[in-house]
Every structure is written in structure tokens, then in C-alpha cells.
Image 1 (cartoon, rainbow, N blue to C red):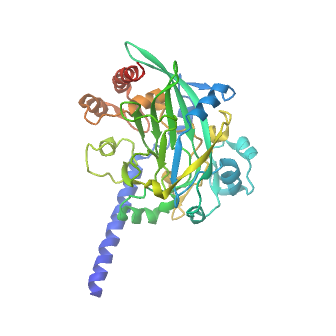
Image 2 (tube, rainbow, N blue to C red):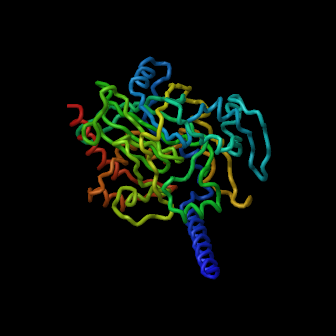
Length: 409
């Protein structure tokens, strides 16, 4: 019996080691080249999408009117106030040739002063276990929701529609791996880092309510998740609620937003590599190494957030910081784990080709049965350094404009 146990342990150990090697290779293959300055690419991107001033009353009015109802699991992470709860509990470091402590008591002024220093980063000091407390006796939790409004025109060869995008963002202190990740992947990941705190600060998940500008009628929603988006159109995919507040439920530990449907627990496919859309949209059941499953909790195990709208200036460090807003981790204290780095500001959320939310809208409204889309997708150049997808976007624009004209007629 002891020999059998030893044999099983040996096999599991070998499996985990193989997994780590494969994960390392996958990370290396999918990693941006060392000479790629992602932040500079975004800052230099030429996009026509406009910001609607936070000072305009229409921005506040629309953000309040369409504020989603958001439900989070009682035993998962909850959004925090970025400055009062996250920044004030962080230390400031610089990582050039060596790690250097800059300041222990960090303030918003420190972020404003240093936000353009790429070698600087924050390190959050609150233990994750203290944040996973159950809220059995609570009826609601206060939450800061960071809101902005954008305008973009979606054009096809025959028509165009002017759209408004109401963007709602949150600040979660940690992002864990998807709860439905298989045990052996979690075991391997556990030797690289903590699956419950895969990286500090989760700010790139977002809810975008899409409005037809002429009538302010909702036409859809874009749910931004870690490495991909999901798009749903009003009347075609979902019934819009009468109170205009779309119900959203948040996946456990990964903090990803999903539509609240029947209130039952479900598991949703997620991918570490955004190019793996075949698995993401069910075209194949072959699970990529960095893919997994989010656990969307049943609604009885959640609590609705009492959302407070915050409208920061568009140049606020939370949006525009080049410095890392979370820890920069190393495997075994030696190897830089860029995939576990805390993120830069919220504006650095996509490659330049998809920064315009109208492009995001059309690209990610994917019909898995559309053979033309699949053909154009397979022939497109998709990488960390290049997204040559104009033909694909043109095709998707034609379809989306017709869909929106059907919704608003």
C-alpha cells in the first residue's frame, strides 16, 4: 500500500512538473517581446472615440440612470475605494537593477507625481484572507463605481450610428485564478504564485452600457473580462429591464462580470490567451493550457452592491498611470513573472486596434456559426505586436449596424 501511495505521489509530482514546464513555455511563447512598450503603443494610438466631459450634467445623469445592479459572492472579493482603501494600504517601490523602497505611506499625490515612471509600482499590504469574510448578516455592501462616458460613431458602407458608451469600472484588491480551474493547473500555478492572489489590483473588468445617442435607448452591453469581452444586444440577446439597470453577477475570485440569468450557479469558459476564441465560444472542447472555467455563483450566495458613482478626471492616475498599480512578482525570487504583475491604469486595456469601443463592440459580437467570420479571423494577423484585423472589423461593422438599426426602429 505504501509503495502504491508513493507511486501515485510520484506520478502527481511528475505531472505538476510537466505542467509548470508547459506553462512556462506557453508564457514565453505568448509573452510580448522585450522591446514592445505596450503603454507607449496605447498612448500613441490614433483613435476617434471622444470623451464626454465629467463636468457635463448629461454624463452624470446617464451614468446614474443606467447604473447596473451588481451582485458579488459573500465569500469572494469585494470592490474597494481605490485611494482610501487600496493606495493608503500600499507601499511604493522602484524596480530597476534592484528593488528599492520609495515610500511606505502612499497618497494620491504620490501617484500623481510618479504615474509616468514605469519602474515604479505599488505593493498592497492587506492579507487576502481578511478580505474573504462572509457577509451572511448583511443586506448590501457599499461600493465605489468609477464611471465615464464616451462617444463613437459606428460606420458601415451604407449607414452610420452614433453611440454612447457608459463605462463602469471597479477596483478589486486581488484577482484570483478562475474558481473552476482544474486541480492540476491550480497545483502547478501554486508553485508559481498564489492562485487566490494571482495579481494585485483588478481594474480592467468593466461593464459598458451602449446607447443609441439620438434617443438614449440602450442597444447592448459589453462585458470586459481579463483577456476577452462578451457582447449582448438588447431585444436580440437579452431583455432590457424596465428600470434600465441591467443585473450583473460577478465570478468568484476572478471578479469577472457576467449577466445574471436564472440565478443558478454556472461555469463559464475563460481563456488566458485572447486568441483562443475557438474554446471560448464553444467551437472546440479542447481546453488550452491557460484556459479554465469561472464560477458564477447562485444568486442566493451573493449580495447586491450599494453602488456609489465616482467621476474622476480623465487624466487621473487610476486611468492613466504607466507605473504598476500592484506588486511585481518573481518566481522563486528570481524570474520576473510579468503575467502576475499588477496592472497599469484602466486606459491600458486593449491593443490599439480595439481601443475604440465601437471596434470592441463589433469584434467581440461573435457568432460561432458564422463561417465568414471564422475565415476572416483565421487569416487575420493576431499577436501582441500586431492586430491586422481591418477586413474582419469591416465585415463585423456591416452586421452590427444592421442589428442596431433593427433594434432602434
